[in-house]
Length: 158
Image (cartoon, rainbow, N blue to C red; front, side, top):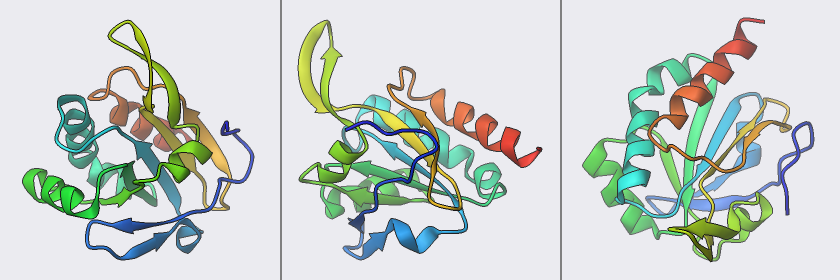
């Protein structure tokens, strides 16, 4: 499935690092950034999470909530959040159903070989529940959160 800018974002409910259910519909009226990543505490995923952490105050100032989604279990998310003091919610998608809906799981190139797995990507959902921007294949995980913040700021200043 592909995500289309201007269309309604697929709804979901997933568990957070404490096992509590989090539903996308509960965040209407806010901007929501969902970033999909392969695995907790791996080099690229850690760089991306820490970059979102370091920009969290600026991101929150744009009426935006950040969620990270990976196939990891809640217990792994909790350790990852605590280790790096991540101020945002990590959600577990062990069956990869939400990732599939968002085009964040499928065929990709890894070290020059075709493989199937989590596609590092980000979706910006606006206050009305529509997809505003989709970054389909994030290349530089550590630099990407700044691009997200810059995009959020351009809309805020209009």
